[in-house]
Length: 235
Image (cartoon, rainbow, N blue to C red; front, side, top):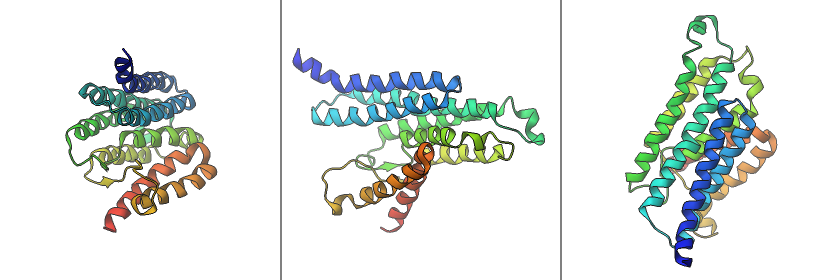
């Protein structure tokens, strides 16, 4: 019985990720962006710990990997897509797009589609054991949640052009499946030599969170992408 309980711990945490993601979807659909963002962050925390617990407890099962992908597609694919869907129903549209304002919000679901493609690719790509190829889905979800909460007033103002938002949807959809190597924050030890990039990344994250607060995670995602590209160019 104890072994059965131990084997079930990582999957239980994954289910908490999924549960939080479902609540985030409901909050996003109701345009309660702050709560949606909170539950996406909770999902990201559970997503981090389920893998860690599986390694610590030496629990390896194919069902855990599949369950993790399904949970991630809800928490980090559908939830941010619904946040953007609700936002695109709020924003101001220029006259030349006014006839399409009832249809444009559905473009938000490109995020969910490309997140699913990203997760499927990750499951079969043997190169992504210690790093990533393409933007990880949690980073993408945290970007959208943070951007909408942190800069909501600006995004819905008449001064903001919705085309910029749609361009970001296309860029981030591409980043999810792009052949761009991106570093992982998994620490094998605490040495500077082995974790230099991660330490540099975290050192910049702190002031970004202090300065931008709720919008800080969006800036951190941008910093993560930039540092990943610079790191690869330096090799």
